[in-house]
Every structure is written in C-alpha cells, then in structure tokens.
Length: 333
Image 1 (spheres, rainbow, N blue to C red):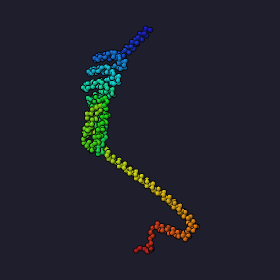
Image 2 (image 1 turned 30 degrees about the vertical axis):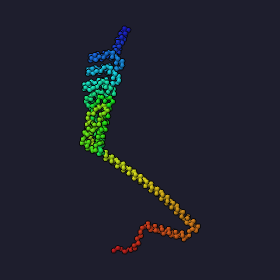
Image 3 (image 1 turned 135 degrees about the horizontal axis):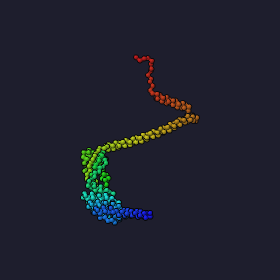
Image 4 (image 1 turned 60 degrees about the horizontal axis):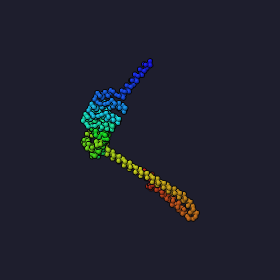
C-alpha cells in the first residue's frame, strides 16, 4: 500500500513538473517558429515568460512579418508590447503599407499606435479615401435669408502628420466655418442656390487641412435648403423692442401724470380744509367786530344782502336761461 501511494505521488510530481516546464518553455510555439523559418531561441521564449510577455503575442506577428518580407525583430515587438502597444495591429499596418508601396517604417507605425490612433485604419484610408459628412450648417446671406448647407468631404490620411495632427472634428469645424463665411459674403442667397460649387471652390482654397492628420481631396455640396428670413425676423424683433420701449415711456408719463393729479387733489383738499376752517372763524370774527364797534349793525345787514344777492345770481346761472315768452291756452292754428 505504501509503495502504491509513493508511485502515485511520483507520477503527480512528474506531471506538475512537466506542466511547469511547458508553461515556461512553449515547445509548440518554438517548433512553429522554426517551421516558419523564424529564428527564435528557446531561452528567448523563456525570458518572455519571466518578463510576463505572452510569447504568442510576439512570435505569431513576427512569423507574419517574416512571411511578408518585413525586417523586424523580437526585441522591437517585445518593446512595443511592453509600452502598451498593439503588436498585431502594427504588423498588419506595416504589411498593408508595404503592399501599397507606402513608406512606413516600424518606428513611425509604433509611434502612431502608441499615440492612440488606429494605424491600420490610417493606412487603409491612405489607399481608400474616406468620405465624412457634415451636419446642416446654417449660414445667412447679406439679404437676410438663411441657408442650411450639408457638405461631403473626401479626405485621405496623411501618414506623416498622424502624430500630433488634428482629427476629423477639426476638418468638419473648418469646413463649416468656410461655408458660413462664403454664404455670408454673398449678396443674394439665389446666387448660392444657382452655383453651389462656388462654396466648394472657395472653401478648398483656404487650406483647411493644414495641421491636420488628413489631406482634403474634395468638398462636395450635398444639400442646400432655404431656411428662415433672418433679416425680416431681426427687423420685427427690433420693431417690437422699440414698441415696448415706447410703451414703457408712455406708462412712465402716465404714472407721472397720475402722481401729479393726486398731488393736486391733495393740495386742493388742503386748501378747501383751510377755507372751511376760515369760514368757521367768520361768525366769531363778526361777533368780535360788532362787540368792539369796528362794525355796525347796518354794515352786517348790507353784507348779508350782498351774500344773498350773490347766492341768487349763482342759482340763476346754474339753472340756465329763463323762457320769458308768455304762455297762452289757445290752440295753434
């Protein structure tokens, strides 16, 4: 029994040792490299394991590059992987550039990949230009009519400017700016509708691809729609604003007039109160004048007669003219 347990233990130990050996020494990958004519040492593969670099991510792209006739080595690929790059995509881009006879060294391809751009897509765009479409750009001609323009821009990737060059968003922004400038400098919107290619020619002469990662091949106007009459709307808004200002000033004048009227009413009421107060003191003043002899009885009666005569005249004036024609009861003939 003890001998059987010892044998099982030895077999298990051998299996574990073989598994560890095959993990650190990828025999199958080494044989594949030799069969493809790629000279990769077994200790190089073991070193990749120790540096935590998957050997398959290096050897397989190396085999592909060797079959395509590219001069790359293990150290270049491993260094690019350790830097965080995509080795397989870089090799595919180098093969595509080599087939299309586009000069692209490994160092530039690796730099483009590490910069965050898709180097394979850039090479493909160099061979097959890409069409990017702007959204509707609103522009206003000098006569106040709004035009909504959509353009299609055909661009080709510029390999030399991929590192540090601006992207598609910059191209679209510059094209939109050129459309707004061109339409805005036109006297009549009908000129743009009649010759939309005028926009393309004007925008192309501005060198919009300067400092970008692309080369503009053509700008084609896809659609031109007539929008609002901005000039008329601005004039209407201005007239409405002036109307509101005039209404505000009129309301201010009305408020001032109401305030003055109320002030005059208060002043009139104050004067009437003083008159009533003075009238209330008249009997007392008359009594004092009669008592002190400054006024006689006849003077008092004369004053009353004058007041009564004045009151009668006021009553007659309020009643209107009196008809003095004699009235008879005889019927009219």
